[in-house]
Length: 254
Image 1 (cartoon, rainbow, N blue to C red):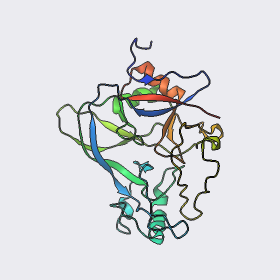
Image 2 (image 1 turned 60 degrees about the horizontal axis):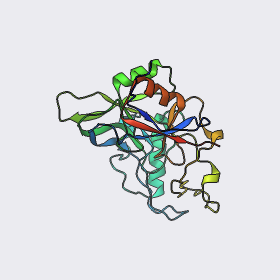
Image 3 (image 1 turned 180 degrees about the vertical axis):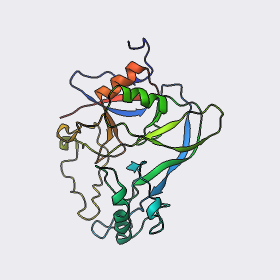
């Protein structure tokens, strides 16, 4: 039976909506703070020869990937921009270790979150919009509900308190895209060399239903990877189980 006062908030939605954006619940009484980065990263891209842009984005992260076997062949310690030949060489070293469905781009991150944490965390935590952390007990409850694609990866977070939670990072594969109708009508196509599309997040964001996965209950968008999306099944399971820390904002789908 669902609790009378669920701690994971779901904003009102129309009956036709079945997807939600997952974000930090600012109304929750959580004080948790994390100062951490992933252990490894691809370099950013310096002056793409096709679009002439220097860029990088660390919102695509694969915490299950261990780059230890190839660190002697290239440096993955920072995302400082490098020429495209060096970036592409690093991509080829990384590619054999990726989970199915992974997408690489400049600044992509790998391995566990390493750093410091303190304060009270909810059952789930989204300290940045593109991270989704979950306490081990909460993950086990969600997996017992039969939710799909929940892969919790260990973190290396040092807590400044005795009673500290075991926080895992959910590996969120990039899949699904914004519907073309919510994007600028005269937008430029993605760069043919580095694939940068250079768009800002549309408001309102509308999902393209034809691109959404059927095998995942939580994922990040491929074209706007700072956006974490979940299914109605995931949101309602969190509500029913009384899992706190995040809020669910309805997203229209066409």
